[in-house]
Image 1 (cartoon, rainbow, N blue to C red):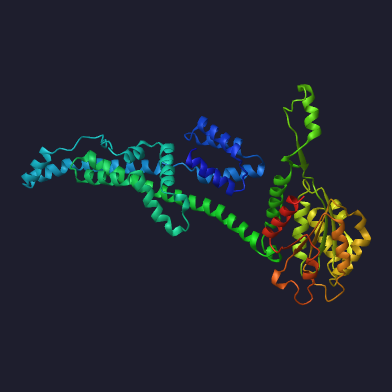
Image 2 (cartoon, rainbow, N blue to C red):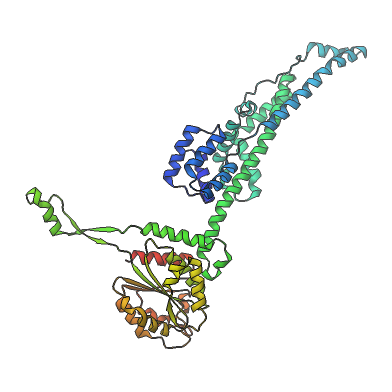
Length: 478
């Protein structure tokens, strides 16, 4: 695949344009039909193949304009015309100089001008013998742009890290394009007494200046494109690892949470049918063997379906863990495709069900309303477990997963271990997500070590990466 096109696809993905492998291959076929020579046709064709929404079209156009900025030869033509006029002016001044030399008696200079006459106008520069010189003097914008892009690929210009490397990569690119041979040609032409070769030298010097400017612009565009993609990647990596209570400092947190939820939903969307080769389904095998005279041509194996879980979420929304609860609820309710049966409960001192809030309001509004209603009391886990058992323990069965989010700090109240044991006995699995480090479990008023004994799984959960891993385990363990 064309390396220039691959880099462009990478830049598009960094600009939030979703491009799958199949779409990239389709766009590659479009590129082979359209080519690079017609910029407007290329932009239109690739836009139709890669941009799927108005927002993506806007991002695509901006990225395309930065990446495929073809070389302009206008400045080169201006420099060439100026050089030609200077040479013609020098030639027009030559005849008066010959007469003045004869009148002054400088016969040696006069004979030199007679024996080495300069060509009459109109002047024409000699032809360049180097590939780079021929390319620059041809005026082919698309070919020059492709040559610059090819040199950028060969020198890994897209790997530029800081702007101070601009000169280094620029020199590497120009040398890769054949600058050394062209500079040798310029030097030889300047030493020649032939005015055609001198004009060629001036044109090549002008072309070299234009090329240097274009290479500089190319490297700057590469830096901007790569820095944008790497900056976004670095920001997302930071958001994945930073503690959840600090995530409000980032503007696009909700976008990242929904992206993670979508990734998990795609991973677990299909209810998998797992075949166990070691367990023969005798009834099905005999039934299918009847048409073949009892010969078992098609052995059937016992299978197990992975069903979508029924999830009950009990969240401590007191001040110490309210931000963690916010993101857990946002995560779970963004997984509606694979977790259609989620019931949410919130508590600080007393517990209440908030499932209807998430059914009636937008996700952010429902979370804010939940925190307002239940987030102002003194934390009491024992009372929360009693309220849960009174309210809906009868709805918990062997297909139910109960998730408890909290730091287990009970303000030295009754822990109600027996109530938690009842929940564990009725549910399929009990998962506890604690935002505190394990070293703090059991310290002070924390009852986590006592609660841990009745949990199927207890995990530290204080970042988005922890949260994603915990939800992934939940879906896998079904």
